[in-house]
Image 1: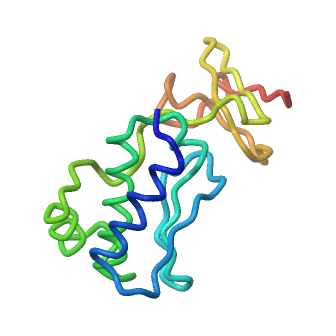
Image 2 (image 1 turned 45 degrees about the vertical axis):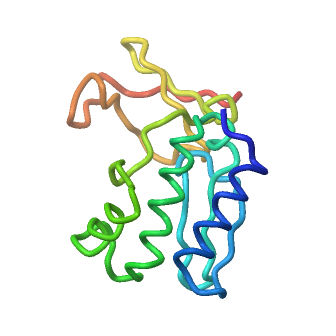
Amino acid sequence: MAELPRVRVWAEALIRMNLDEGWTFAFDHAKTRAGLCNFTAKRITVSRHIALRSEDDEVHQTLLHEVAHAIAGPKAGHGPRWKAIAAELGYEGGRTHDGPVPTELAPWVGTCPNGHTLYRYRRPTRAMSCGKCSRRFDPALGISWVRR
């Protein structure tokens, strides 16, 4: 698992090598996204919860992903310009994080009639059905939510 002080060193080195001196790094408390590039604040953040559950290479790939966003600019999204820059930096991942998330921190736990478990960090506000059981909303597969 990644150690936060080492992640900070990597992040600051990547920022120094690839971005202007206005950019900074910080850890955030996100629970489902691994990183963020904030163009307004000129800040790249990594989720401390996810970093602590991820291998070093996964966290390094997240940093490369976010630095590529900073270089490509706010309008690039995950389009061709961003992809080219990310590849040049050595990024090998996809558009989204698919590694471990801190489900033990989720205050809402849902279960479908077939036993699948879902986690939410915010109170569910509307009815939902199990996406593993059916691709369309099906009231018969409704999720029953319980607050921990």
